Length: 211
Length: 422
Image (cartoon, rainbow over all chains, first blue to last red; front, side):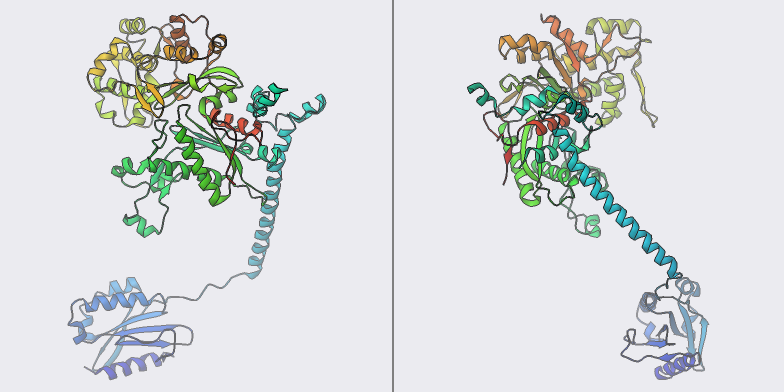
């Protein structure tokens, strides 16, 4: 089996042959944990996690590595696991396929891609038709203006209505009274209600008695 | 503030036992309605922590979405006006009242920048003690200091609102809700010293219906009060004369058959040979003193007792006829005959059916009250049932706010006028 440096070099050579270069530091998505390698083709990034045989001694190490790698699919275009060929046989590739992870295996003879990784596209969607978008913007703007006008009209109606109601009790001519008591303006319970006059005298009864 | 501004910004609130009706004058014929209740959220629950910070108390139409376990409902779901009166130190109920009032006012906050607050008219039970007025005014003051939404406020009794909405200046209003009933004579003002209160309402009719259901083998249904109430409304009848109506039903069980299938379920209630018991339900609401009810009292039915809230004594066993006479006889003699000519029944407890073909044995609520009064020597009383009883209190509030002059200040002598907070 090859050593760590040799595995890294073999993987770097593999991805270089496909037009990718390794990112060492200073990038948004750079290598951090032990065994992490990151490559880029200038547009997307490929994240690779290398595991050794002795790295699998610890309980749940493989599971944790897979979980970590799945997390990387939210930022990287492709995510690979690189395992010793011997260990790869115990892994069910269907699980990796379902999660979109790729699998690389290595031994003393070199590296091999046994399961290609799924491409995760993280670039924001470009507007397909800017003209259509512009038209939609204009229509929304027109709708907003209409809502503003309607709101303003509603406020006017709300403030006008009580004034119309108020005319009912005012001392005005009979013809005007009939005009002011339009049924569409007055709620039925306010029409011809003797209480309106009784209540309107509240606080004035004493003065009336005194005079 | 001008009269015109007040008339345009009158806001009504009816704190009913089950429902809260609210809205400004611009709402038209009908107010908005929500259940008069609040739900205190469980801050420690996992769901609350996952969902992020929430309010301490939820009111309004969205309340059902916040309900958690059924076990918690009895402690967390609070109906503040269930009995018409809130105890002075019942902080949870007063918190709900404040939150509901706040919710109502903010639901109708006008968009205009010149809004200076509503002229708020709230309506409470006629038997509300003074401290309830003080507590409600205090809640309004707090709301105004926080939101600036109340220019001035006033509180009027519910029967007074009903009389105003029905355009009758001199009358007796009987308001009967879930927990109690109020008999209030009105002659341009509510005659406060003449108010008679009964510790009896629709809830008592439900309780007797539950006992009847148990006796007829439907004991498993009685734990859901809403179901019991539905059964009561669909099988209960007011008898013309209890003994005679029962005898007729026993002689012809088919004609008086009391059966009801609950819509959308497999529940079918059939009193069968005990269908005569449907007359007990209606009679109990109007006169619980008949000897037939003694056997229920001796078992598990709670006998309506006399209780005192504040300064008011709520009578348990007084029938509606005696209660009206007692209230009217506390008024000046020359007013009494006018009061008997206008008796107005309001509230859900008076909505009773008379099925076609049973008119010889069953009567409406107004006919029953008329008959109770005539039995006691009152000749030719006029009893009517309020139209749109759900909305009439709110409508009365709107008319009151619209008409009472803006400069008529609140007075504790008459319990009328506007109380400003600024």
